[in-house]
Image (cartoon, rainbow, N blue to C red):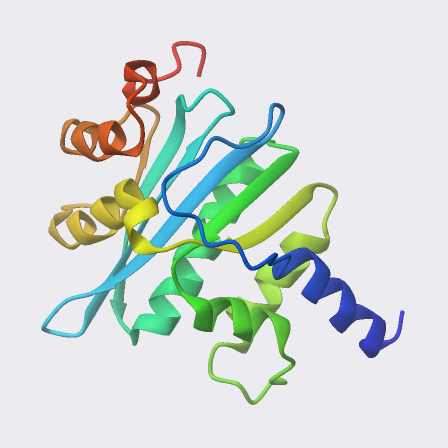
Length: 193
């Protein structure tokens, strides 16, 4: 496969943008999970990330929080997206729509910066995941529509552990999930996970 064709495929898969900006959190299609990720950098320059996977009914499937060390916000956004995609792969989800509020992250995935790019390893691993044996789309969403991921990322700075996976929503996240929808069942954990 030529690089030009690969670039076209990245653009199709990654930036399937139709000009509509999401104004509120929306359910994914049936059979698809929605991954929301966000990165956070505090005043000391320490980065953290968080994300949540929810199904087509809005039920929490799994979430994560991760301390990332010292890095700029773009690297935190990329690493958070990568962490979320790895988690979705681990849980064997076959159809994923991943949302980030970082347009720079999406642009980096669409462009070929080459091995000299400082985030090349993260970019390439995300691209490899997109190409693997599942259906993944990367989309942009304003921070207001990924509240829970934003909350998890900001709260990850306070973790005792470096990395935490949540099979049920942490208590502090319930309010954020409730803001996503007026449907109360969307804040509950999926009992089958």
